[in-house]
Amino acid sequence: MSREHVIDPSLIHHDWDETLPPILEVESGDVVHFDLLEAGNQQVKPGDRFEDVTFDFDTMYNLSGPVAVVGAEPGDTLCIDVLHLEHGSWGWSGILPGFGLLPEDFPSGYVRTFDLSGKDAAEFDSGITIPLRPFMGTMGANPGGGVRLSPFPPHVGGGNIDNSHLTEGARLYLPVFLRGAVFSCGDPHAVQGDGEVCVTALEAPLKGSLRLTLLKRSIATPAFVTSPRRSGDGTPGSDYCTMGIASDLMEGCRTATRSMIAWLGEEHSLAAEDAFILCSLAGKLKILEVVDAGMWNVAMCMPLGIFHERAAAV
Image 1 (cartoon, rainbow, N blue to C red):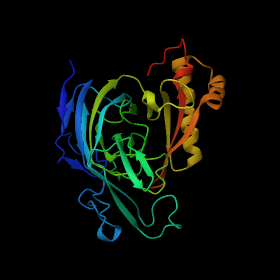
Image 2 (image 1 turned 30 degrees about the horizontal axis):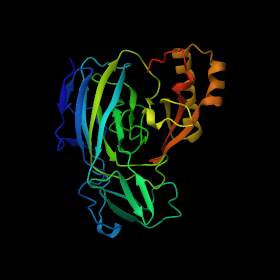
Image 3 (image 1 turned 180 degrees about the horizontal axis):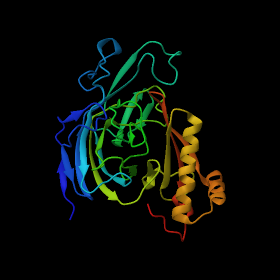
């Protein structure tokens, strides 16, 4: 029988450091309840403008964990079911000099804050409201390698993937590199568009519940299944998506597509040639984010509704 655990929100870390001892050990299938601090917690306050803020990038990301999963070994897969997400009472977004997709166009800093208390949409401007779709910008298994890594770029174990499709009801698959999987999450967002082009989402506190399940199989790259309401293009159901995380956009596209071809072969017995054609006919190549320290995240998404009698192992 699965158990439930509550993480102490004050126990945070700011880097991917495999020497950190786990703050919690769980069994496969257990549910963990997180209370996440937004990026820039205590650096940005409600009502602040850019001139009011002193950013400390060494402590900007507040990661909750690490959480160890009993029995996880390198080569396994960690499955994360997003059970519940609830955004906090306020949030902020901004432009930071030197960051984002267009640093030359926007050399000056800019910050604005939003009241989100009791709301399901952000009031952006007169006549403009944005429905809120909270998610965790960072979910990752420590990639190991004996090197302490910055929290900003995503990595082979996921990390700061800024995947706006990982909303309530979605599922994430992460490759495991260390014993225990060593999972952490953070960087909560109330809403974000694909790309996160200005470098920030609507950064906001978040309470979230995740189920962590150990799978004794290997995957080459992180992958995810969207919640049913997120599937588009007229196809019912969810999308199964593979991610390509790379410093070159085209390499990320190739990685995501190759991983999808491999999945179509393993789960649907398609020859590589047929799988490649299916990616072109039904696949949706998405840029998930382009602004995280030179590492881009691309997804190849396949609508599961096209598979009628074939049961996908997702």
